[in-house]
Each structure stands twice: as C-alpha cells, then as structure tokens.
Image (cartoon, rainbow, N blue to C red):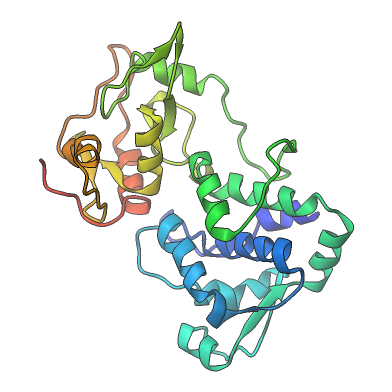
Length: 292
C-alpha cells in the first residue's frame, strides 16, 4: 500500500454516518509543518490553538478537541508521539509537553520524493472536504500547493465524479442562485454560478440533482462552511454565529434567513430531505438566526 492510499485510509471514528475529520486535519497541518520546518517536532502546546482553529472552522458543528487525533494518529502508522500520557486530553498533553512528528519512514519518503507532500495533501483534501474549502484549509494549515501540478487518480475505492453534474444542476435551477437569485452571465456563459453538493461528495453525497443546488460562488462557500443551510421547510437557514456588521453583509447574508429556497423547474427533483438533514447535522454551525 503506497503513502497516498495510506493517508486516505486513516481510521476515523464514525457513528450514524457522522463525519470526524480530526486525523485528516492533523495530517494536513503536519504536512504544512514539514514544508516549513522539516522533521522538527510539533509541540502540542504550541500547535493547539491552530489545530483547534482547523477543527472549529472545517470540522463538524460539535464540540471536540484535537488532543484525540494528536494522541491516537500513531495507531495508523503515520505519526509518533513523545511525552504523552495514557489519557489523551489536552491538559495531559500540555502537562507532559507532548510532541508529535510524522513517522520516520514517511519522512524518508517525503525527502526522497519532492512531489509527495502535495500529492498526499491533495488526496486528503479530496477524500474529506468539499473543493470550495481546500484553499482556506491550506491557508490555516500553512500548506503550499503547486496549482500547476497534476492530480493523479486516487488509489482508493471512491466513485468517479460525474462531469455532467454541474450542467444538470444549473439547468434545473435555470442558471440562478437558489438562495439570492443571482443569474450573471458573460455572453452565453454563466459567471459566478456553481453546482453545490448539499451532502458532500467526500461523504457519500451523490452527483444527482436531488443533492445539488445552483448557488453563486459566495453562497456556495458559505453553505460549505456552515454559515448557510437549508431548513426542513426548504427555507434558507443563516447561522447565528455569523457576524456581518455592514449593510451589504446584512443584505446578502442576514436577510436570507427564512426566505424560500428557489425550487427547480418542473421535471427536476428538489433537494432530498435526507441530504438536508445531513448538512444540518454535519456542517451547519450554531442555531438558525430568526427570519429578517
């Protein structure tokens, strides 16, 4: 099994389909650290704040800690820890001055192959997160990816993406954002409109219209970040954690709360209720802001 396959198969604790990207986020942070500092150890007390930021911003909307992956990732053969006690709590890792680093054989592979860091990072991102979030995750993790590099097919059993998904979704919603109605075009080509997965593709979300929404680029990003969601009554949900003080922020985000999500044209299915429920449970952060 090569290294790309191994990082894609890190064991994640799951229950009832709930996502737990703690180990992938730690690996991304460790790869960024390797780019900057080589094999220098990562002290938990120094990295805790940044690791927790990664989990808060890109993890599920449940309270958790990065102490668990910092302690348990070693069971996957990718990580080693010194100074850790038996109890994998943040306090214990701080008190023991615990430090982690990538496994020595992985470090040798990274030094022998200058492209491996980027290939591992891309594989982790692709198998765990929506593509709209990849640049932001890399920025917080301190990762540099070469945009000109080619991405090899993932050596893990994941379904191939349907290249026609975007066009089908945009047609269903008549090239309009389902949240704000934006319908910009340059000539005959839509501009700033994207096909969003409600249940993420990396989490088993199908490339089907019943799992898609046509959204402008901004509202797509906010959907994937958990700022926006969809209520069971097919209205827009806005997180009460989102802060927008300007009149523009209120107009394009706050004022969406409680507004009806645009329905697809006749003959195309709306978003399925189980995909809406998944997003509400696994992505949407906080409580729904009252309707404007």
